[in-house]
Image 1 (cartoon, rainbow, N blue to C red):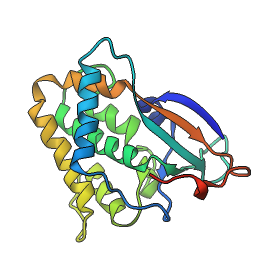
Image 2: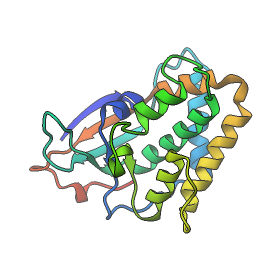
Image 3: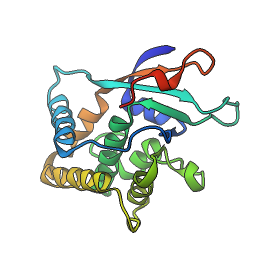
Image 4: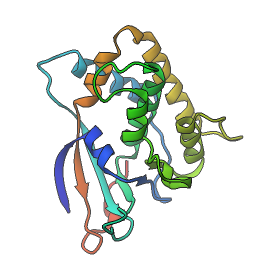
Length: 204
């Protein structure tokens, strides 16, 4: 096991893809938890005295052996709720900024290309985050801007709509949101495939 502190956005950018294993529970954050994340982001973004805001750990193991030409996807053992919520917020923010770039690196194209998609890939490899069950089709539709499936994930859709509304209410100062997102920090915990048993790690 190897643990390091990392800025969340940098962690998202360098990682090829996150996959939620089928044995993980589905996305379950409520409006209360999403609003808490939102409030934390606004507080960090509006204060120069706050340099970082820790939001938890991301525990993962590589799906296979990486090669020089292709990094293996990361199987997420702990951190699905945070990754999914931040991804929904980032897509909502990309739509909110439109043609603008409140601060460097936060234009709609950069938000999507750095943190949400692998632009040159096709199929499932196009998406940075793959969820399980009905959650997956719903978040893919949101990222691609297409219609929701016949049986959407209500939690995914409702939380995306929540972030969209919060950003609409905060439209006059998206810079604060961008600054807050840039300050989010996680503990990056990489498990060793040969030495660590992923299913013994608590799943969140």
